[in-house]
Amino acid sequence: MYKNLIFTFFVSVFVIITGCNSTTQESVDKPKICPQCHMELPKSNKNTAFVLLSDKTIYFDDVGCMILWAKEHDVELKNVTVKVFTNDTKKYTDPYKLNYRIDEKTPMNYGFGAYESKQERSIGFDEVILKMLRGEHMANPKIRKQILGY
Image (cartoon, rainbow, N blue to C red; front, side, top):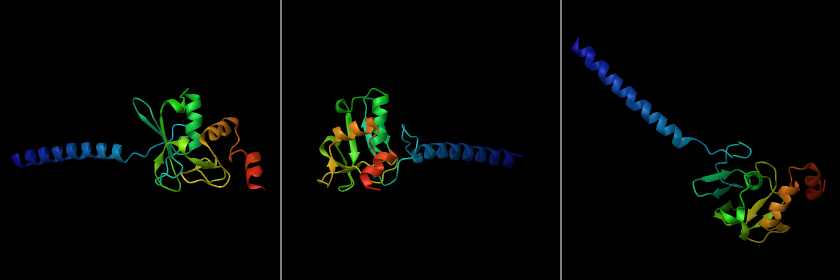
């Protein structure tokens, strides 16, 4: 009888410890989701961006999503820490110091790819914001046709 009681005790302890570990591991492995489009962020970081607010960091899968989110939440991007992942140097950088191509393949098809080096037909971040808010991006079929020429 004592053998069954001891066995049951150790099995119970094992189940409790294993259950706690799986919950902790699940939260560590949970993917980041873009708050604007609700898509999972790419593992490569290409085209991603983040906004650092006083209490949290908000990640985006596309520069365009960050701009739309900031507009909807009355966040002035010049007044907070913002970083955009560059396609050439593969690091997060101040978006106002970057050059943006307007014809890139991006997760939400907005088309704005960030580069530290000067690119042909590139624009600055202020113009990216303006184009996003006007709907002048590659996700708009008329603009896509105008940019790509077909």
